[in-house]
Image (tube, rainbow, N blue to C red; front, top):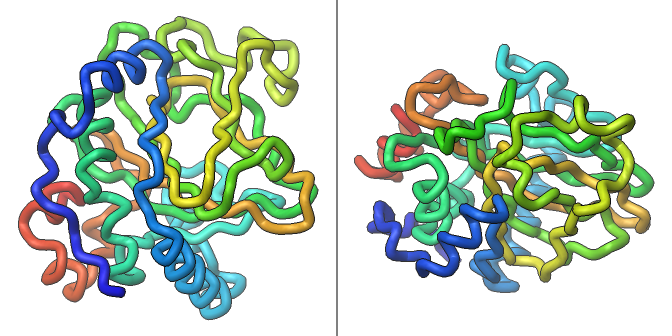
Length: 258
C-alpha cells in the first residue's frame, strides 16, 4: 500500500464544535481510529526494520538535539526523525483531523517539532507526570501540542499514557503540586483504545507513560508540534533529505518549516 500525504489540511472544520470544546476544556481529544489494521501492520514492519538497521544508534537524532535533556530513556525503545525514514510516515504530520486539533490549540502559526517512535518495554515505561514545556501557560497562549498514534491496543496493563484533565489551565507544575509525580493522580485518566487510534493532547496538560505490565512492547508514534516561533525538537532543516523535500510538496514543507 502506498501512503500519500493527505491534503488539504489547513481546515479546522475537520473537527466538530463539540470536539474543539472538549479539547479546550479537558486538554485532550480522542480522534478515533485514523489508521486501518493493514496500515498499522505496515508501519510496525517498517519500525522493526529501522530498529534492526539502526541498532545502538536508534534515536541518535534526539541525542544530538540540545532541546532534549535526557534523550535515552531507560526502559523504552526510541526512533527519531521519522520524517526522513519513509513515505509511510507522511500521514503522521499531514492528516487533516490531527492538524485541525493542533490548530485548535496552537492557532495557525505552528510547525512540526518532531516525529518520533516510543515503545515501553515489559516491566518499564513509567514516567512521572510532566508537561512538555518549561513552565505553565494559563493565558491560552499555548506553545506545544502532541498527538499520539497507537500502534498497539492501549490497555490498563501495557503502559498506556495517563493524562490529568484540565491541568493545562492551572498555574502549577506536577513537581510542585505532588509529593511524588510518579504516583497515580486521583483525577488522572488513561488513554485506552485500539491500535490505529489517535489522541491529541495539549502538551501543557499533565501526562506521562505508565508501567508496561505485559511481556510485549507497547508501541506508539508521537507527532509533536510547536508554535511557529519556537525551536524544533528535531531541526528539520538540518535533517531534511531531497527525497522528502520532493515528495511532500509546498504544504508539507510549510509544516516542517523547511
